Image 1 (cartoon, each protein chain N blue to C red):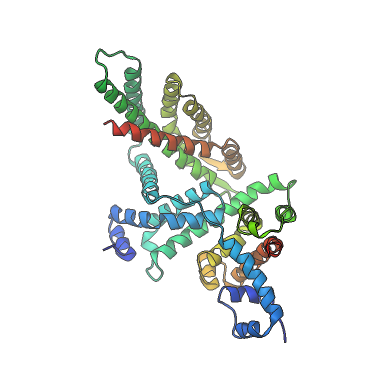
Image 2 (cartoon, rainbow over the protein chains, first blue to last red):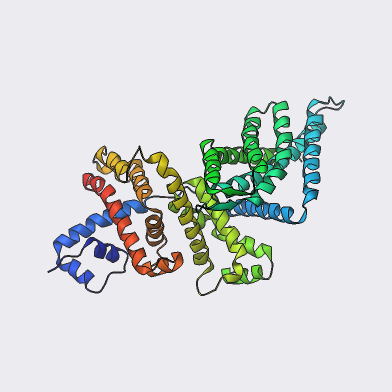
Length: 242
Length: 191
């Protein structure tokens, strides 16, 4: 009797074998042993779990999608107005933060703590939003297909231009406030944003790959994600004081 | 009572974003698990989830209710993962050439694996499985994950990836063979 080969055993394992395979296995000890070994290996593969995501993971994904959509709509409809309003809002957030931090107030205690919490939250929300938008640009570039020809990155380039001024303001503020970790990531981010914003909209596959390598080598996407998530954490306790 | 996917899709098609939100919240965790198994990396998996939903929103009008929304969404994620793995492999090829050829990682892990029962389902097996999955080509890994973890038939996988039944079948066979080569020494040692 002809034995089942490895492919037929795999098909049997997945319930797609041709008729007769099950009968053969029932009758043939050699094939049963071979099948058992394959089954053990594949069952070990099944043990590979993905990291667990919490119950609110869907809501987090939705928030990121809304930010992405918002940044696209903004680019489409606001045009030049973005250049004025976004830095202006960033400046207001920073000014509020710095004023609260360095301007002595006659009143103390609860009211001051509350005002501080509001300022902290305003800044953290603005920086968190900024990091989320930056993350989207970096992710788009990191995964942009380069099929050997030229790649249109005009959309990412426009967003990088939008983000650049805000980034400078946030970086300076973080430095002034003594938040070295945030300042350092914003510093790294700024160098890449400058390169994207000042580069051409249509780049060669090689140029794209260099850019991707650089983002990857510096672990920039990962750093922005980590700091973004820390900033989001800082938004929450601050928000509880409101 | 919980709204069905098809009802949420109809509302989303009528422009109701909250309906799409329902779908995102419902399917994100499963999609992440699929993306992680495809890419083997949390960051990439997060990107796959995000891109899959953005593409689903963009292409919702093309969704045909012959398959479930979840299946359609997973197909989008699988195709994007396939592109992503191919890109990464091609980018890594130059860097890795001096470090390994296919099988080297497996050989190292398998050769150094002590054969005891207590290790069978431990971190060492996991490490070997992960290393073995890394040696699969993008096509093999995608086809294997869809068959093994998602339970899609070979015919369905071929249709989803546009690769045809025969090519898909061979991708699954090669994947199974490589995984067996990597894991069987540990499995037999554990007996």
